Length: 116
Picture 1 (cartoon, helix red, strand yellow):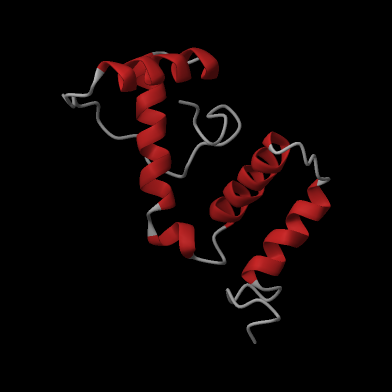
Picture 2 (cartoon, rainbow, N blue to C red; picture 1 turned 60 degrees about the vertical axis):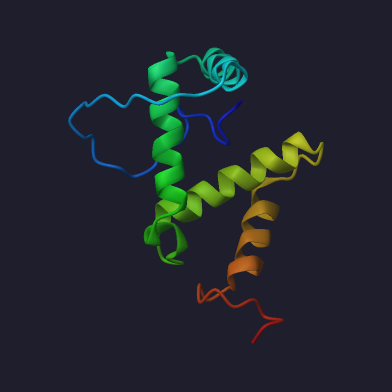
């Protein structure tokens, strides 16, 4: 399993917490997928899983849905670029930014011009 974004390029805005241990039971297929994702991202398994959790917490936080949040805007731009590249649609950054602005609305209100 690969993270949506390379953790080296984007680190969700989270304060570094004190280290704690989380024990979970997962099936072996998921464990192999996590191990493969760690290898692909160049991280240890612990670092990879921690990054995936940080990413999940961030994209489910109120900050992610705030149209004025720069980290959320950057995250969406990078994610759209990676997704379009994976589809074989390598788009220039300015086109990706325009698509995101169209989706969010040019004024940042979250309403596209067709919704207004």
